[in-house]
Image (cartoon, rainbow, N blue to C red; front, top):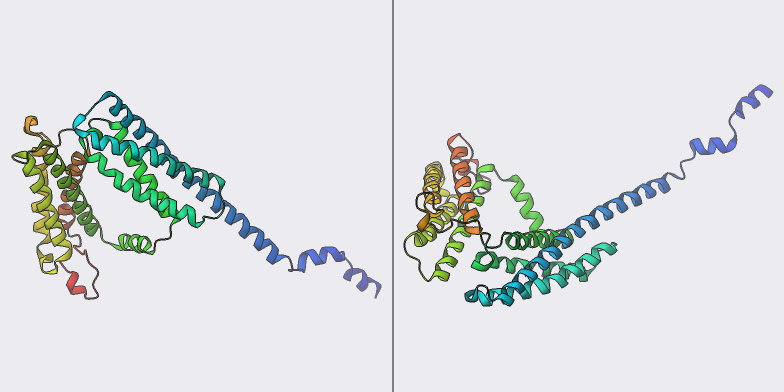
Length: 312
């Protein structure tokens, strides 16, 4: 009997409680959950600091360069754009500075931060128009050009991170489910749109839209119409391979003409900038789209419950 009693007491009572008592499991899980939340909050704060910091740097560079243009009387024909650029830089600096301090403080995101982030995003999206003007195009001031687009990107990423937009989440899931050919059609449409807008602005600044300048506008508009038709007009789906091949040839020849490969004296987008980037972006997208479809890729651009409706 004593041996049985000794064996039953082989483990001290506190040890038994530590081994078998699960009363503290919930507390441990709660501690782990808190640690995970803290890590996620720290990572989010780092991202927001990066995005806001990009806006601060871009605002400062734009403000300084535009102020220099004003003081030296550079680009007198673009005086309005330069004054607007100074305002964009000054106000953008205050907006980004506020977001930077809020991100550095950490904690939960409040309504003020969400509203400020959304306004900052809209502010810089509007300011991106400056990159189409002569005073702030990529060929004239590369550092200013890059700083503006860095601010636009930082502002948009910041807004996406703090403002819950259901439409943005739906757009992301839709994009991820799209076939590569549909993505290329979308990229081609976007590039063509940017190209003809840049060409139109240049026509207005030069007060001349004849010759190569007019051709540059037509190049983008026609391509945009064909790209939208491929995505939205179902009866054209059996012919998308041929349309894509036409657009690949259309953009290859057009890019060489308007960027001065054949004749630099009459080039519309000889220098680096939105028009130049969009032109070669459209050419690459068109060639990739044609190659994808010719090699048997799907031409699906719209979801449909009828599998025959999406057949090429």
